Structure formats: structure tokens, C-alpha cells
Image (cartoon, rainbow, N blue to C red; front, side):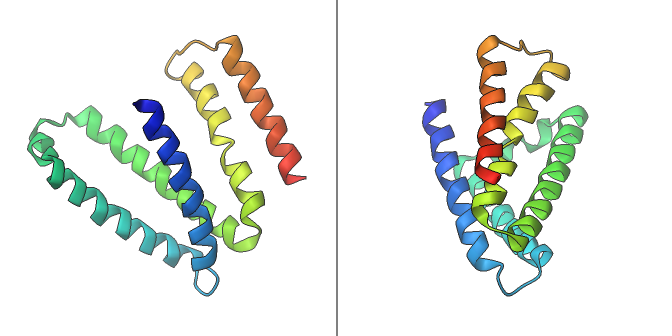
Length: 137
């Protein structure tokens, strides 16, 4: 089931880029990011209440909260940079570079989380990097 959700995520991430490219043509990229973030915020809280997740609010540890806040800051910076790049050039050039996040995630997972750097992961990261270069150049 995890792969289904991951695939669904990829489809909607692709739609996000296309819809954003159309939507940012006449406004500041930071304003566009703020509008998008507001929609994500409202939708996320609706989902929390729909599934009853609000009952877990009191049990969140300080460590968890700190890392979720840091993750949120990283997301915000990523979105601001993504929208600015998207406003400046073609989506077909920005998105492949953005997807280098897969390569960086593999590297960070190895360094920070101590995950195993399997042969498959290393080969995949190299191929993604080469594919990005081919698509952008």
C-alpha cells in the first residue's frame, strides 16, 4: 500500500508543478508560495479532524515537535526556491533538478540516519543524476 501512496504522490507532485507554472505567470513567486501553503495548511488540518488525529496533539514530544518544525522550514525554503525557479524557466528543466532531492535524500539518509548505502541505491542515485543532466542540458 505504501507504493500506491508514493505513486499517487508522484502524480500529484507532477500536477503541482504544471498547475503552479500556469498560476505564477502574473504574480510574485513568494506570494504564490504563500497562497499554496495556505491551501495546504487548511487541507492538512481538515484531514487531521476527518481522521481523528487531533487527539494525538497532547502526546507530541519536544523532540518530535522540533524536528517537525525544522522539516516545515526546509519545506518552506524548498517551495520558495522551487516557485522562483519555476517562474524563471521551463517546468521541464526545473522539475528534474528538483528531483535530485532523491539523490540528496539517499546521501543524507546514509550520513545522518545511518541507513545502509546499498549497491542498488548508489547505482540508482548515479542514474538519476545522469538522467537529470541529460534532461537539463
